[in-house]
Each structure stands twice: as C-alpha cells, then as structure tokens.
Image 1 (cartoon, rainbow, N blue to C red):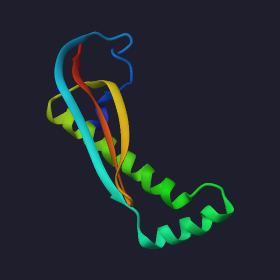
Image 2: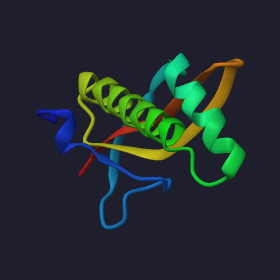
Image 3: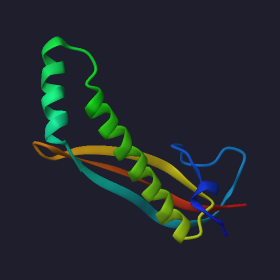
Image 4: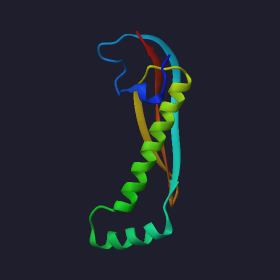
Length: 111
C-alpha cells in the first residue's frame, strides 16, 4: 500500500512502462473552481490593450492546475494506489469570471 501521494506515479499512458498493473482500483479525480480577482481583472484588461502574456491569469490557472492535480493524487492515495494511469486534464468556464480545472485518471496497483 502506498504511503503518501508523493509516492504515487502519474502518467498519461494507459499503462506503466516496465511495470505490470496488478489491480485496477477505479476512477480518481480532483477539481477546483477559481474566480478572478477584481484587481487582477483590471490589470489584465490594461495588459490586454498592449498585448503579451496576462501573468495574473497564468498564475491563477497554474495554481488551479496544481490544486486539482494534488486532489487527484489524494483520492488515489486514499484508495491505496501505486500509480494513476491515463491521466487527463480538462478546463471549463463556469461563468464569465470563474473556471474549473479537473484532473482524472485510473488508480492502479503495480507489481
């Protein structure tokens, strides 16, 4: 049984190269919904006028991805997984100022 989420391997492939899957534990997922801050919106709007990367949004989404990924690994750790295979990430707009990030995959035990 895996000790912590930091021990869990996560891959986008359907299997783990060099390892055999001994047991499929099921779907695991993690998600978060993040909303833009009014101050960040103002700065982003100004930056949008001159072009280039909108760092405030990039940072917001990077933090959301990390949190959703960590939550997926937490779910896998609770099931006693060694790995998560077929990992996918999706994003969607909930409303004009909020986005959801979801990570999901199949929790497995390895030989």
